[in-house]
Image 1 (cartoon, helix red, strand yellow):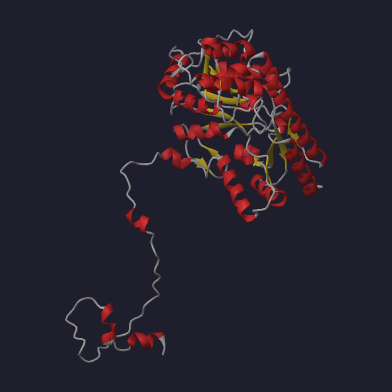
Image 2 (cartoon, one colour):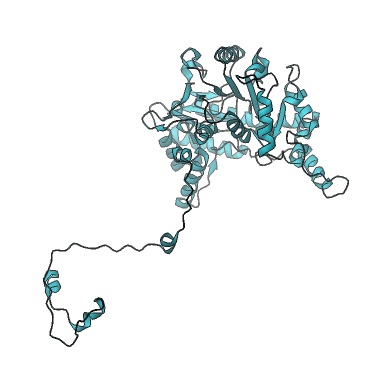
Amino acid sequence: MSVMQQLSSPISSSSSAFLSHSNFNSRSKNVWVPAKRIGICKCVAVPQEAQTAYTTKVSRNANMAKLQAGYLFPEIARRRAAHLLKYPDAQLISLGIGDTTEPIPEVITSAMAKRAHELSTLEGYSGYGDEQGEKALRAAICSTFYSGLTVDQDDIFVSDGAKCDISRLQVLFGANVTMAVQDPSYPAYVDSSVIMGQTGQFQKDVQKFQRIEYMKCTPENGFFPDLSSVPRTDIIFFCSPNNPTGAAATREQLTQLVKFAKHNGSIIVYDSAYAMYTSKDNPHSIYEIPGAKEVAIETSSFSKYAGFTGVRLGWTVVPKILLFSDGFPVAKDFNRIVCTSFNGASNIAQAGGLACLSPEGLKAMDDVVGFYKENTNIIMETFDSLGFKVYGGNAPYVWVHFPGRNSWDVFSEILEKTHVVTTPGSGFGPAGDGFIRVSAFGHRKNVLEACKRFKQLYK
């Protein structure tokens, strides 16, 4: 019997369960129902929680909706996890996220252990400390990194890391400022600007946010922007040595940058988190440049020097003579932000920071930095031997050019065929497309194995 014949056949008493309550008499004769043209109805089960989900009346922050996909490194972690599900027995090597791998030197951990133990004693216990950091550590940072640069220890704010301070600085600046960043650059600068409401919408055709000036830094311009073509902005984020390219600005280039900022009345946020990796010929601080204290804030960290990526300790310098347009000191407002949103860095972490800056600690940090620099050289030599254009050397990252190729495609190719995680250059900005970043943070045996696999893939 056809479907239409079945639909036009009489409804018997056995079908009464499908009928709504009515005066229908199940003892009566069969009732004929005229056939109608009908379609197929698809029944979809709806999860119980979806039916009962409660929503508040609070609107989502519209700026969050502007963010593209996910933050770069969680997205890489997601793809890495998916790869391991596909290849559960793969010997995965991660040279993607810039996370340190070598143990913290004992001269530093022993100081933290001692401070931790003191907290268990009546004499050694301490609670809240100064939000700006312990005076001894601020003084040590000042004398170690800013000796002879007329930076005062009171200009230094100790924190839980440079990345955290970048967001605090964005709160300080507010939503109504304009922003410029190196392209490519560390994605936290752009993403925090978007979250603060400083930007317009994301333009997919050019892979840029409106109201952000992307200062193109490529091999063609020596990874330093043509400032003559950069419009004025209120804030300029500048990282040197640069993440991801590994390029370091020269003294002449930073002099141009400071003059540019002073001419435009802009503030530079100078990220020097990799300063110990560059040669002595390049400036290690923006304050080595005359006039910089009037236009620049500097942020830095112990993360990549001492392996403090998990310990969390950094600092930001805000000179007292740096003023807003109305003459109000920037440092006073930043101090208020810090005191409102932060109770100070861990006293145990600060004990570690103080140990870092002892003569023995400085030697230990130099050894850690030297180890990662050797990794950098191994990776650079590998890709160079394969005929690639390779850049970097002043930071623990290698910037490899794959002309005409999409960065995510290269990332996927390397992951799929070598089980090595890298970072797609386009994740750092549109000028990074066609490049990948290879991190030098890794155990030596893993770096050597990864380079062996690179050679097998691209020989």
